[in-house]
Picture 1 (tube, rainbow, N blue to C red):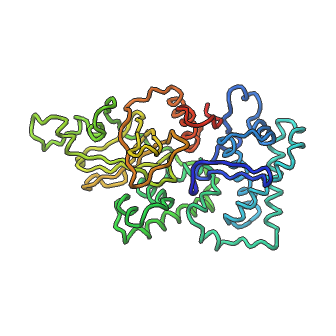
Picture 2 (picture 1 turned 30 degrees about the vertical axis):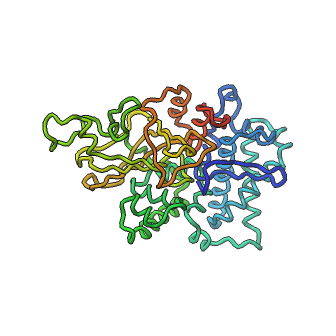
Length: 396
């Protein structure tokens, strides 16, 4: 996700894709298409939609992923430099070569189309690498921001990189994109002293550089174990009371203390991380008064309403603690997906409250169970399920 997780656009004159790179695609071999298209190779159908100029957002992202993976594979085997500028230029060259070859693609048998397109992208990348007037070097990569690097990775790659990080490092990785937050705000949000934030962020960027340069083609890491379950109630109760059910009453409370009074001793604040991040690990929960031997998790999705009406509603699906349980203030990352494609995302100053403790949207539940979708695709499909965005493609 660079500075925006939303739009994908095409210009007929320039013939390029401007795609949300934080979350981009499923690889060509795994493209999930509607059931009626499954009898044809998915990549062949994707190329038809490209040449007919009928691609939808999720399809554009997956096409970008196909091109990006081919470009980076070519650079690796040709011994080139993993410069973001080289990759970006080669991706645009590859896309242009595909569009120019649309008449030939149309005449090619479905089973041979993917190989033909990979060859087109490979040849365009080699030509770009051989351009003597270009100046692609390792120094460009070292100076690139985390956002610059992630623009050249696909959504599954970014998701895999983030999920493999410990929770606090994951929060720091996300904070590298929080351009609307100050240094001190980020330090407070992740529970680090301001003096140690720069070094910690540099360590996270170094991890991304390693992934970017060498590990992007490796098998994805094993999934993070599921969080422990939490009791939750119907909408209408205080959100803090929802997250601290009777089972979490501190032992020090006097016998007979009402659960409501116990819940009042614990406070929970849900906020955004950056207005540019609204899919996947995109919210923070700051908790005080929670006993060290207790934790908080979600065993079912909950719908969150923004405190500001012009911001996106979110569906929260998981929590991961980044703090020490003995800290006075506990901090959790929240995996959540926006369902309002045309509204603004939430920053650290923007809060949320509980709207519903149980989803009643059957299509949305199906989307959340679709493991083939990348984070940004989940958010787009949920927006479609809730009627706030057109069908982005590949939701089922």
